Length: 354
Image (cartoon, helix red, strand yellow):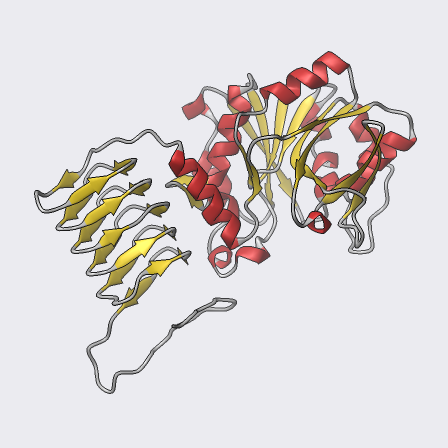
């Protein structure tokens, strides 16, 4: 079985971070989101992976490489424009051929792996196997209508959802999915919707099975989703201390301190990860925080947040929480007079003051 993973799109819901970085490369617990997708399908036994990328950018190719670091082969499939998930499948037909495959949205995360879904697909002999998750806002997703334990219809982003389930971003297909994606028409928003492809399979009497994700699944398309995913991964991270901790610091709980990092006169209460060569001085780092490499935190408090590389938080008198700081971001206290708030804020940024 092959795997097809998405890494394209514009990441509009995560701007301004995605103005300068592919959303699939944003780190969760200091590891790019896309790595989790790759490792998940590898854990299920996949050896050959196709990653669909934006045709006008090689950022993902440069970051991921040919797969040799994982012992697999990775190919890249350029998509000229974001024309829908069914279009992603359509342009991947040459790569997939006649083999069954798992289609994994690269910004999704799931606990427990995907092998159990592949096993269900093979046991049932179905043409398509969907994973479903109960969500509070099914209108954001493709929504299945279920009757007598069978999916009878799938509707994309319905105004009035027929169930509380979302079709999660993990699908398993045989080659009949290509018949579907080559016969559906673009939706009103100009995209080939994967829900329409699923509906085509149902209407043409192909077997569509499903499994409910009873554990944790997250589509990391929004800022708070990233923080929640970070929280969950940190809870399961195996702690290790490779950096330096001076005698006046206090470390509690599940804490990882990477090589070259220094904790000076500070309290770190896990689960937390501190990236390589970062310095935490006279500060408090609270639970569910990821700090990437080469950051400097001094005389400040941070909790339930993600800081990308080269961030600086200096002399801030209030606790920072539920925050995302992009690469090279700085939050500093000015000593200049008059004492005023000064902001240098990019497009689609958000700042909350208390």
